[in-house]
Length: 327
View 1 (cartoon, helix red, strand yellow):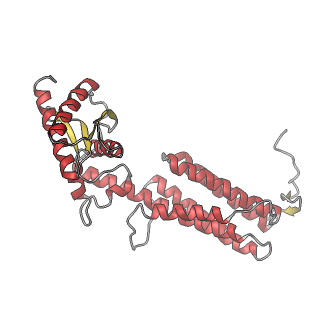
View 2: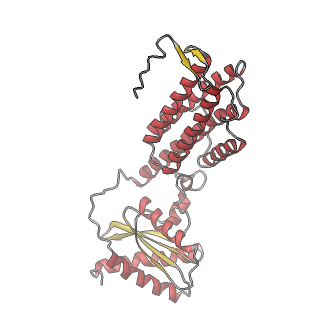
View 3: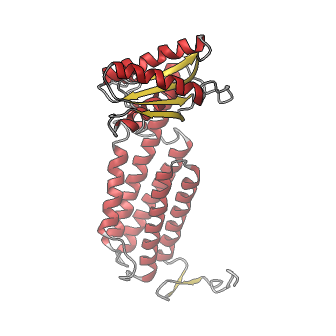
């Protein structure tokens, strides 16, 4: 069946309640604006890489479609948002507000493409809210729909500032470490065989210290090559060791040193807020062969000082292995 029905050629259209109204009717106008908002959210969804935010945006699109149905059906009980929908988006707002450092200044959109699209979506949401308040005077709208649209603009503001903060941290890291971009064409020299040898030697060190630990080895991109779980190590140490290796790999720094740089007032303040996998206490170090970065090691099982000592031992062993051909 063709989408071209010609029924609207005379300037009329039907609402969901079968009422025939002019296309200039304020309800038709706001339905078009909400449709436009959903399209902008779709654009944002197609641009952003984070699956979590993609999922949130899809859910939001579904909810504002419910608002559209409510308006088109004339506040029909069949179509309405709930208090639970409102609570959910408020939780997301609080989550993202905790992921960046608030700045007491006027925000100029345009720091990066993703946050710029978010700010466009936010301003369109504000326009929808103004229209919604206006038509509510003549065609009452459920209170949760009005509150949800209001919160949506807050959500978009908070996520945009989170994205800005994350990008700012990445730039600071590159400037501080003088990294102009990872060399993804570099030959991988830290392979599984060498990692196994290194794991074995680090385990002996941990055993001599009387400390059961988890040891993780990552390549230069932060991808894990191997993990060794010593007998008696705490289950929670697994994720910590893996994240220490990940952190040292992507920032080319020891996690203890990164922690010092992330304190209040320092160059990388708040870096751990940009990525939940970032660890800023001892136990992770970059690994080098012939002074060339090849990967990282992460150790977890003791306190920060104990983990750091064992991980640093692994760095020294790596140097010895490279000099001795990996024997």
